[in-house]
Image 1 (cartoon, one colour):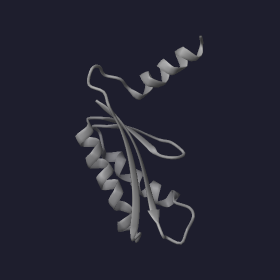
Image 2 (tube, rainbow, N blue to C red):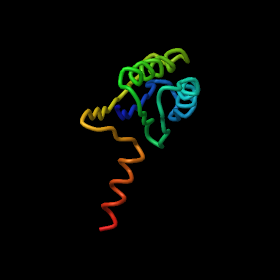
Image 3 (cartoon, one colour):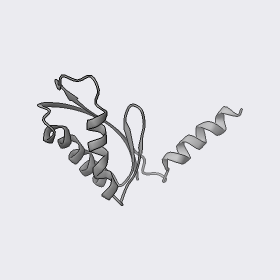
Image 4 (cartoon, rainbow, N blue to C red):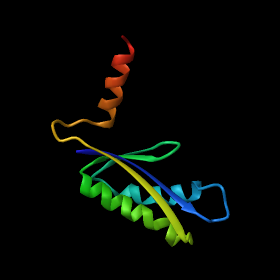
Amino acid sequence: MAIVEATIVPLGTGDTSISKYVADCHKILKNEKQIKYQLTPMSTIFEGELDVILQVVRKMHEIPFDKGAMRVSTSIKIDDRRDKKGTMEEKIKAVEEKMKD
């Protein structure tokens, strides 16, 4: 299982706001049952099988082009741990537990 962070930013749109593009990208996630995702103020975080996540991010990367953007910058961070399963919630919980010390 992988945890992936993706940021998809259309460039040169003439508008400093990208929330409408983010909303359009997230509309396709409603039909994705094989992954979990979490919208954050700066990115979207995914949890699931890496191949599935990368296919979804590829679809999301195309959405700003479909909406008229001529350039899109997509940044992806991948945490692909294979020695044990770890969810987004478990990673947060591990840090919070250490903060109690």
